Length: 74
Image 1 (tube, rainbow, N blue to C red):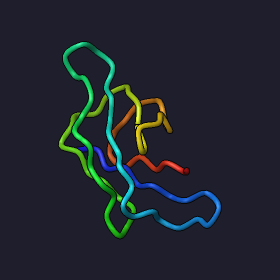
Image 2: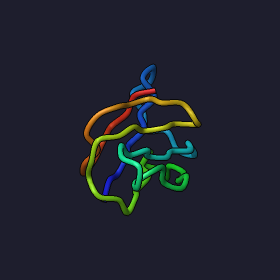
Image 3: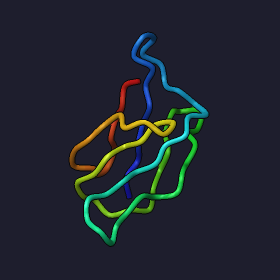
Image 4: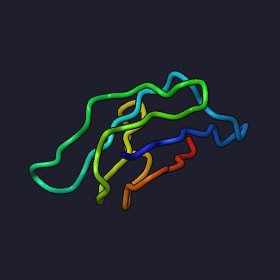
């Protein structure tokens, strides 16, 4: 499982209601379905760890190894 936490950089507060998706390297893995962040700014995905990208509202906001909790500042 991979959980993404979205933090608004200007305020340091969690962002709720943000659309998040993960894209993993490799032909067979692809992109996950969109999830929306909850009141804690978190969106969870039933996905194995691996190299990839975090898409926030359709834009690439993070690249690297995705595992456990990934915090992204927007």
